Length: 217
Picture 1 (cartoon, rainbow, N blue to C red):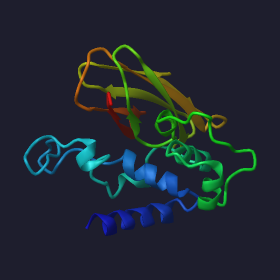
Picture 2 (spheres, helix red, strand yellow):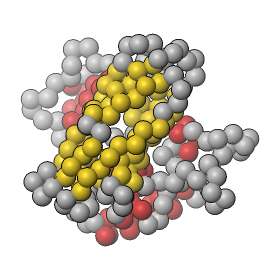
Picture 3 (cartoon, rainbow, N blue to C red):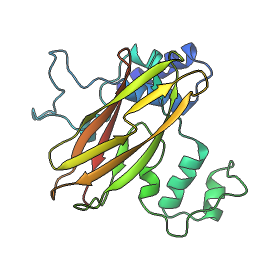
Picture 4 (cartoon, helix red, strand yellow):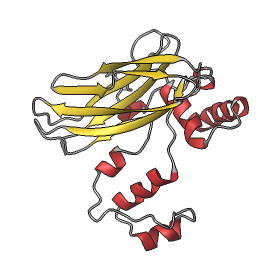
């Protein structure tokens, strides 16, 4: 039943915000998702363990939150083309898949998984993170709320993983509706298991949450 529920939410969000792109609608649904069940406890798996993004993605979709998410992540054509490059497709194959390839676009000579990590997506996935070898990604958010807003980053990270957001505050005004930030991930101790956490931007009224997954493989 998740498909019709999310489809209904997406249709409602689009009706309220007709100028939004599909990626903005998706972002609004993901970043306002809920991780708490009706007993005010963390959502669990069938076995009773705490659910991870592998189990619930960004969380349980909210019916009202996506209508006014505060900030959204816009994923553009270049992001998806870079994704295809990282998947091993060459420019000739990509042009068969997409009719919107810019004339001056070309795949990097040595595409890596970092291309995927740097997609302007509402979540973050980091692979092959080695001890004391930090990796960085960049994200850009668009303000859909009040013009003059200041958002502060709240980081939830597990032990053994150092996460830093620069800048830790985003100040929007009528001239600056889009702002970028950088996230640095550093493993301070080895881990054989994938690590989960989140980055939440809040201005006191809105909470814009992005889950992340970090793997050493």
